Image: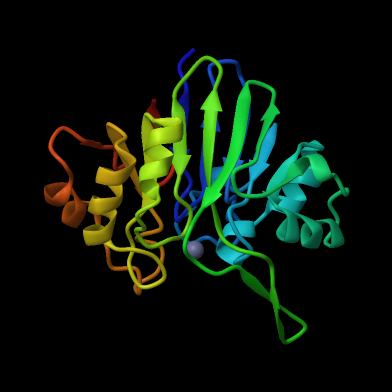
Length: 234
Ligand SMILES: [Zn+2]
């Protein structure tokens, strides 16, 4: 069985490993206008990773974690806040940047990202640490880098040097994250032969498109732009 990646709209993805492990990254399903109806209720899950505390990334992480008793990985401040929202406390799931933990056949590493991380609680803004990217290294499959919400930054070259990802999932929607112009430079720095665009098309304010990114990408980089609900083999 091949590793597959399904885009659930916005920055939400489901990754299924060759070994049968099902991972949700930033599972914004409820309230996500781009999420196909058939994807709103996960039927199983083995691991959830949340890159930062904004609602459009935390999404359904708590309910999925509760329902399937699966690990929910996030940076330590955000993971502590999620515990207060109903997940069991578990420091094994509370990583920080540069840290790696194995969950089944998936080695999970949090990386740097340039963004913010907060939520609104009872009318007050609560800060939830920093925003992260994540690298998933699969025992029997590719290494996938989810940049999370970010601009382009020079240390993406370290992601290439350390993890040499086969696939880079990059935000392209502009406004809250980088747009196509910066994403093309990110693709160059990360050096992955395949790029998956994310964080676009959800709301009118997110104007970046795969069509705008495609001609800017380094020679030979394949753009895997799929529609929400579509699954691609990695
Ligand atoms: Zn976002």
